[in-house]
Image (cartoon, rainbow, N blue to C red; front, side):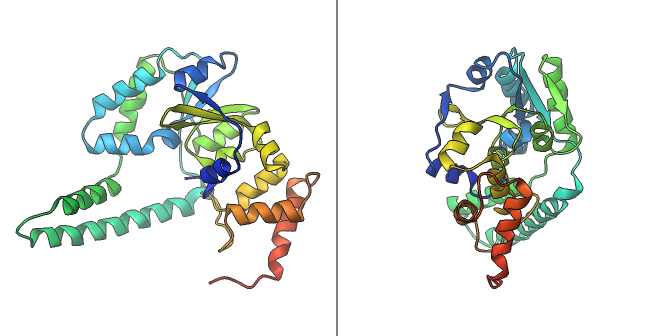
Amino acid sequence: MGVAGAHSFIKNQKVKFQQYAGIREFATSLQQDTVYVDFFGCFFYKIKKMLYGSLKEKLLGFFISLFRDIPNLVIVYDGARSQEKLETSINRLKKQEMGLIKLEKMLDKCFSLSRIRKRQYQAVENLQLQTFNVKAEDIIYLKAGMINAGINIVEAAFEADVFIASKKNSIVISADGDFYFHKNVKTFGKFSRSGVIAFEKDHILKSLKVSSEQLLVLGVVSGNDYSPNIAGFGIRKNYGLIKKYSSISDNFETCLEKYLKLFKWIPPIE
C-alpha cells in the first residue's frame, strides 16, 4: 500500500523517530493539534480478518476502546473511489479473481485426498481470507457504533489519504507509505509491535538531504497507488538519481522534468 518499499527505505536511511506506547499517548502528546487516523490504511487487514471470523461485535469493541475519549483524534473513512485510483482497484479485483481460481483448484485437490494436512488446511484458509469481501453493511455498522460512542468520524469525498494530505501541517497515523512524501504532512505515525512510531517531516528531509519538492518527486516516480514506476527503478535507485541530477532549489516540475529526461537514453526494460 502506498509508495513501494517506502517503509524499509526510510528505516534504512536511519531517520530519527519518536516512540510512543500507543495511539492514546501519541495523540495526548499533541493535544493542541488534530490527529487524523487513516482508518482503512491502518486497519483494513484486521477488519477483513475479524469479519471473516464473524467477530463483528468484538471488532467494534476493539475500536471503541482504542479511540474513545481522545478529543483531538479524527477517524477518516474512505469515500468513493476516484478516477485516478481506478487502475489500482481493477488490479485488486484481478488479484482477487486469481485467488478464487487458486482456491477452487486447491479445494478440488483437497476433496480428492483421504486426509488433509495442516499446511493444506492453512493454505485454504489463507486463500479464503484473501478472497473475502468486506460488506458495506459491516462498515456502516462499525461507523455507526463508533459515532454512538462519541468518536469523531469523517468520511472523505474520495480516498482518506487525499483528504488528510490536503490539510496543511497535518498529523496522521496510517500504514500507507504515501504519507512520508506528501508536502502538507508534518508528522507521520505508524503502528509498530511496541506501539506507534512517529516521523517528523523535517527529520526525513534532513536525513535524506533533499527538499520537500525532491521528496515529493521521489514518491511520485517510485510506484504508488496512482502511478507505476519505470521498470527496474524503485525507490532506492530513484533516490540516487534525484539526488544526483536535481537540486534542492528546484521546484516540483523542474525536478520531475530532470528525472524524466534521464530516460531518453535508457532503453525500455521488458
